[in-house]
Structure formats: C-alpha cells, structure tokens
Image (cartoon, rainbow, N blue to C red):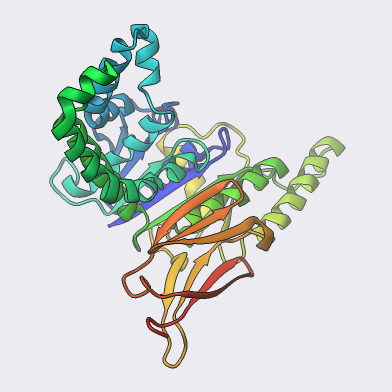
Length: 395
C-alpha cells in the first residue's frame, strides 16, 4: 500500500494537487483515500463535495476525509490534560487560561496523522485495503518535523519515566503534601507511553519504503527557498522526498509586457528549482484559465501535471538514512541532507545516539544495533550528505 504526503507553504495549492492526484489514481482503478490534516478544511472545497470526519465516497474508487484533529487530540491527550488541569487549578490558575496552557502547540496536527495509521490498518469502508492514501498535510513541513518527537522523547521514555513512576508511587503522599498539587496517577504515565508508541508507529509508517513526501511550490523565490529548507529538514528526520510540484506556472505569452515579465521571472525560478532538487522529478502545472474545482477539473489538472508518469508508483528516491558495511572497510552511516552546507551541520555523540543539528533543527538519532558501541572515527559533509565513520568494536 502506497502513502503519499503533500506539503508546502500555505497558499501554493497543495490541497488541489493532492486531490487531483487522488482523483487520477482512482480513475486508474486504485482504491484511493485522500485525507486532509489541514485545519483550513480546503479539501472539500477543491473536490466540490461534502467531506466528513470519516471516509466519504466521492467517486468510484475514491474516498475523502477531513480529519477531526480535535477529536484525535482528546482521545490521545485527555488523560494527561486532565492531570495538568488539576495541577493548574491547585495553583490557582484561571480555568480558561489553564485550558489554553494544556494544549501543546501543533499537537492537533501531529495527532491527526494518527488517523493515517488507523486507515492503513482498517482499510476502506467497502472492506478492501487501500491501494493509495494521499495525505494533504498542514502548511510547510512543521507537522512532519514534529513527528521527530518520539525520537526526542525516546531517552526520557526508556530511562527516566520508569524511575519517575516508581518514585511517585512510593512517595506520593509525601510529595502531594509537600508540593501542594496532585501527583500523577498511573493512567497519566500510561497515556504518555501509549502516545509515544502511537507516534512512533506513525513515524515508522511515514518513513517506510512505501511512503514519500511531495513538495508543492509556486515559481516564486521566497516559496522556493522554503521548499529547499523543507527538503533538508524532511531528510534530516528520515522522510523520503520523491518529487516536487511547481504549481500555477504561467504559459508562454507575448500578449503584453506585464505578462511576459511574469513568465520570464517564473522561468528563472523554475531553472533554479531544477538545480535545487537534483535527482527529483519537477512536475509543472500551468495556471488554469479558471480555478480547478470539482472532479473533472482536478482530473484534467493531474493528467496534464503528471503526463505519462504514474504518481502512485513506488518511490524512486533512495532512503535518506543508510548504514554501509563493505568488506574490508569500516562501517559508515550516511544521512542525506540536501542543500545543507558543511558549516550548518553539527554532530555530537551521546551514548548510543548521534545528535545531528542542521541550522535550528536537531535530531536525536538512535544508532542501529550494529553500530552501538562502535567509536566514531570521523565525519564529513559532501554534496549534501553527512557521512559518519566508525571503528569496529574493540578496535
């Protein structure tokens, strides 16, 4: 089963492109779900069809769903939120303010992606497995970046949480009196463990060999710059980017100087985009004479966009994270960081983890079992790839 995520700067038309891709796949005979985690609720507008919180039939072989992020948030965070509200109430914080303080910024969008896993597991309403799940993500790669949370919390969940749980259980009466606030019950700890496990499963699905991300942009310098940063960030956190969609491209014209000027400016940005994403297909969608709304218009857009390509084909892009152990050579870890300059990358070792920092983004990368305990002998960044070299254990 194929999972394809679309993301990009707000307003570039990613919902339209995602819906068109799903419509094209369904027309080709694939059982397809297009699922939106974007709080803007643009998917139904693009399809010109009412879309509910569960898969809604839109056309033969095509279902659409607008995830109820608030519902998913309440299901996954309610136990923890209830405890935090009790703590803030004991501290005298106003109830309305307390409610705002217990909501994690961006958590609703992240938790909405739990629905992707649920749909992969349950399949379509007619009882068959999905062939393709298209995900219209919230603007930019922020939602995907936040899925690094399981890795960032891994050390805490494995080492600190068990000890903290035992201490609270033994000293709960004393701690409650001393602190003047309620101590967490087992259901709070259990909720954190479940949330961590659920998000880790989602991350495993979306970084797997059958999942990929497509970046949608418009031919503007500012938008292109954000798309380049998104590619770097997505690769850092293990997401496979397999294509770029340039949307709203002006067709060639000499009708007047104003329109000809826009065409020329876009051509320059598109040439830069081709250089910015080496090895990735750059699909182009012309600016339509009217807004592409409804299945017929979306199918026409997607057909022109992809041409003879099958957008549901297996990802052609290599995995951004690989470990190589060639005979007679020391083991190497390679992490693709396209667009990252050497001076932007920082590397540190902490036990069996590597801490990789690129600009303002940081990933705690748990080393595979074969490299755990192996000392690092060197590292380099060449052509957008971080290579970390290790010595064999005991060497």
